[in-house]
Length: 160
Image 1 (cartoon, rainbow, N blue to C red):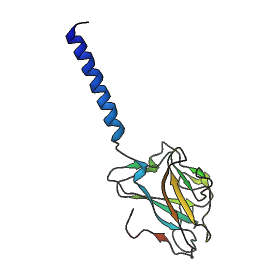
Image 2 (image 1 turned 180 degrees about the vertical axis):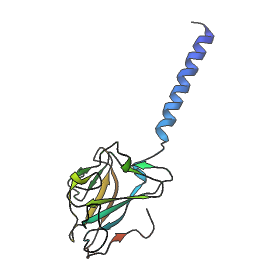
Image 3 (image 1 turned 90 degrees about the vertical axis):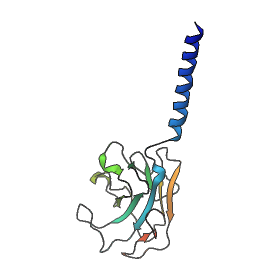
Image 4 (image 1 turned 60 degrees about the vertical axis):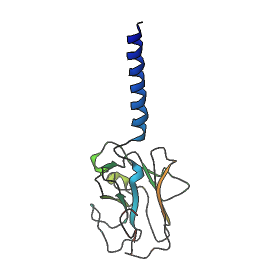
């Protein structure tokens, strides 16, 4: 192999290595930008879901300036079971626009669609968390005190 060929070969390897290293540090979207923004556990006269019923709900806010897909993550109300509800991948509804939110209904009716969780919220619900797709890495969690009917818990500013 000539000296020029070796130089070109090593330059190509170096460029490929640099691209791999930088690609690992940049991302166009990340679930790390998601926040549990507002929760209503006891819904007596508030928001009505798409099936005409009231249930507790959880609002997830995308604090990023790019779209973030929550699909593949988990939502749970049980710290001992972080993989309680898996949010399916591949549905456009799971993509949260920049600085926007998505509402999940805690109605224990997951057959009604992706936004309907397999658990309920009530006046004793005190833990809500979002986990990454491995079910181990915590993205965000909220501990609540006693819940009153139609009084939601929310952050003072979206995502903060």
